[in-house]
Length: 243
Length: 355
Image (tube, rainbow over all chains, first blue to last red; front, side, top):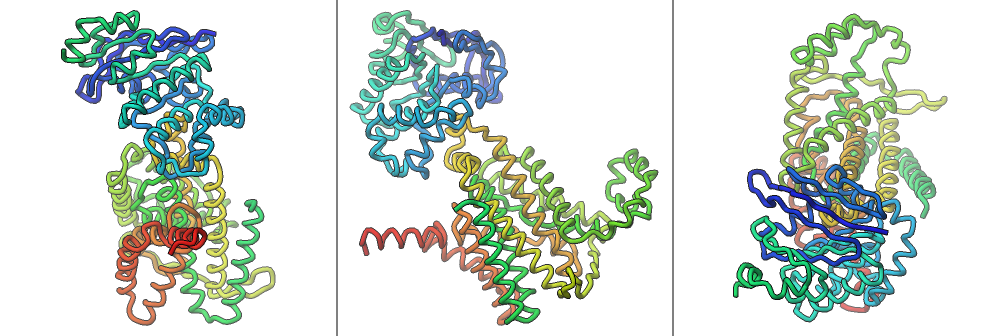
């Protein structure tokens, strides 16, 4: 079944500050698309627009879930989550004073996800064996890498169709970044997810991306149709890597 | 423990306390006990929004006073007289609505007036629940200190309105003459004993409700809001709706605690009803007891309110406020998670054998 995401010509602003300008982007079914950009260029805002946490002032955001089209700009965040679009927020954003297991169960807060909570929990713990050992531990007491795994697992509790990952590398040691990225790839293959990942770490992100976009000052500066194209582009070297 | 079972146990404990007070204590026991029970309800109510959701409400006094003034208004309400008297405060706002009201004849209601206290509690709870919902809509975009300031402002606004509402006494205050005793199913009961009993029942209801919320999905939803609101949204928790539920329940319980108050005090004026001590006490008690479970506000209210009552009769009533301040400083330093947190930590230490 097709699960895709189409963003057309959206503008977004925080009060008078314009953050996104005429952004057009699409993620086709089963793809991993990476959204590259340094700090303050609008990556997280774009993700928040998709989740309905920030409302774009113009343009449209549509998602196709199991072949049915939905206009996300008209739905609330809860409804978007209910559709099967899960977000792994930037900086993990766990519930530090709840246990690992409680964090996971909260991932299944919406009715459809709750119906298969036990089944999904078992799946998550299979994917992330470390979380099974730590089920009773407080989430805030785990290491950064484990917390990132928990954040991913929590999103999986929704049995999502489309997974949005906002900067999984934040605050992690290089080896853990690499492991996290591998895990996203593994999950994507296992569950046939459609993935949109915002990331700063160019070299890591490009390892698993099918294609990507570079966002500079709220505009799409470059669209690479293959990972290769992104890798060998002069614009990227100049704008993004500063070479 | 299942909720109905807990409710019955709490009822039995409450009845036992009442029995002991009746057997051993004099009238003073009931006067002091009423205040302690009232603070148990207030602290529990505050904790639903402040402890479970993490939204610090400084305006507890406003909800308490809404409940109290609701009772005053209903107590003074005489269905055989024209309605315009009681609506005097609203005249500048709604001339037309007021004219429409003045043609209404509600004298058919006179057999049920004056209303009994349980009915007043229901009314008080209803109105302050609505005020809570309204406050939620207006202020829940704010967080942290800004939310606290907004709730404090709500108390000031409501107090100004009551001061200008002549029907309930305005700034002069209102006298409520209560009967000295009443007959209840053939048993003669002093009025203060009756009020005590009602407040006891209310505390049991409040504690049961708080415990039920804590263990339900609603409670988990509240905890996610407290821990990280953005992550809660990403999980699909309908944060705004849950926060509105919390402000409504919290406001409702506070109003219910306030409804019998005019009958207790006998003379109510805005300065008393909106007193800062209600706001401060209902924050301090859960903080001292521990905010994450229903036990915290109960323990905190028992400790602080009892101490205050004791200090009031032995030293002076002014010292009561000082005691709260000192206790709060003490607990913030020694036990930031309150008595409940302290007990849990000690128990854990004993289990693992550390010293």
